[in-house]
Amino acid sequence: MTVQAPLTTPPTRGSGPAAVLVLVAGVAAVLAMAGAGVYFLSEYVSQHQSDAGPLGGPDVGPNGEVAPPKVPLISSVGFDTFRDDLRKETGSTDVVGLTVYPLYAVAEVLTDPAKGRTKSLYYDGAFSDSGLGTTTDRPFDVAQVDADAMVTLSHKARKMVDQPNQWYLIMHAPDAEGAVVYAYASNAYGEGAYISATADGKVVRRVTW
Image (cartoon, rainbow, N blue to C red; front, side):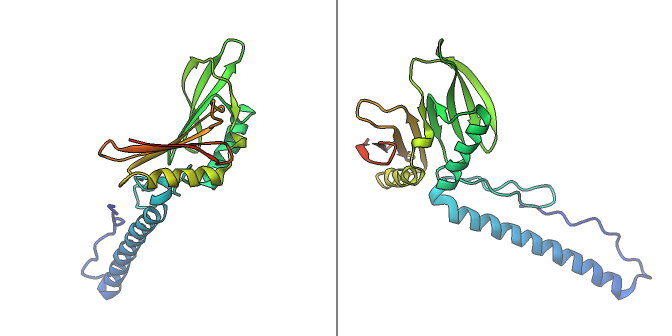
């Protein structure tokens, strides 16, 4: 993190010790702010790494200010917030498919059920359109998914992989086995695993590769 000290007029010969003390105090305050920012970043990453996966850290402004961190979506609070925002955005919590990553999600929603037309919505705290398409899949209500169970499934999938560095969740209407949620995890070696489960978290299948 680079923090620039505010521009201060150098003391003149007539400024005396008082001006020097003011300058030193200002520099000390800037260094203290920088240290606090670094501490905040390290604490946030260490606290949320297990829940959110690899993080780039909160954004830092030109003057060293730290922006509020994003709430991980693979968490009860994050997922509940997403569902509330989805209802506000579309008027419903129905989706054809949903993929949830640590800090963003992509939802496919029906725009014309008769023709199977869909729109993809990218979400990272706010929604933006990311494409159009068609599908024959039926929609389902993500409000039926137990958020706590979803988080537990993700943790279990990660424990099935040595040194996981990527994880995400895929959700869709119940398949032939009744599975709604698929929790995936993988590592840098191409090894991975997934757990499929019902909306309330009952495990249907475990797979590793």
